[in-house]
Amino acid sequence: DWGEFQADRGEFNAQDAVDPQASEIIEKLGLRPRKAALREAILALTSLRPWHPAELARVLHFSPDKLTERHLKAMVEEGLLERTHPDNPAHPAQAYRAVRRDG
Image 1 (cartoon, rainbow, N blue to C red):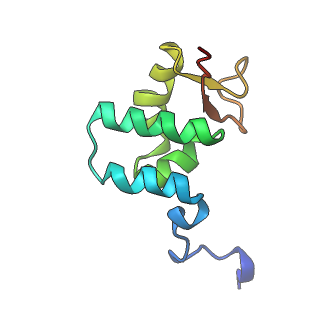
Image 2: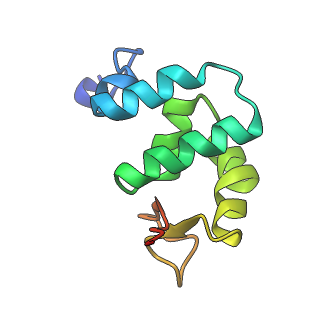
Image 3: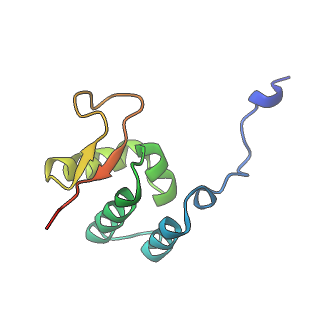
């Protein structure tokens, strides 16, 4: 008997775990967004708070690896996002936040 360690059966709704402002961004995006719209949504979400790749992937319906490789990494290189652990990209608690543009 696995008791409390048994796998969840889909009771978790990722959008229930995000604030209303983030939910609105996610809903507007749709299920198959174009690259520009997806990156705009990532910027909007990461301007609210830092997000772990798995969190973003879950609410955006992507695999964490593909989201990181195709979008998050590129957005860091473009200066749009920053890592919360910049010296260790593989840090287990790595999260991404939008770079603040003052002025």
